[in-house]
Image: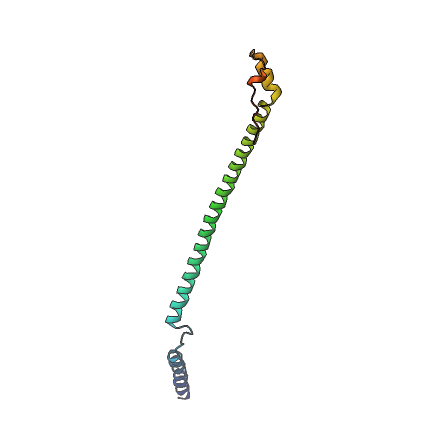
Length: 118
């Protein structure tokens, strides 16, 4: 009988341990309200990161357009400078006089008017 009593006692101990483990309830350290707040904070951070990247892309595109426009302006300025140099070269007195002689024109001092460059 002592064996039977011992088995009964062991079974009681096992059942008490099972009962004790089921009675223990762990409380979560983060409440549902805090979970919602953390979720909203994470969503806000992700939204702001996407917003920053989008704004940076827009700034990059504008800077690229500005650089392209500056290159075009420089190109046109160079063409204008070259054309101004051609005008100066073609309007030299010696060239005009030579062209006039080729066309059979002669110099009459009574018909000459002096015009100053401004």
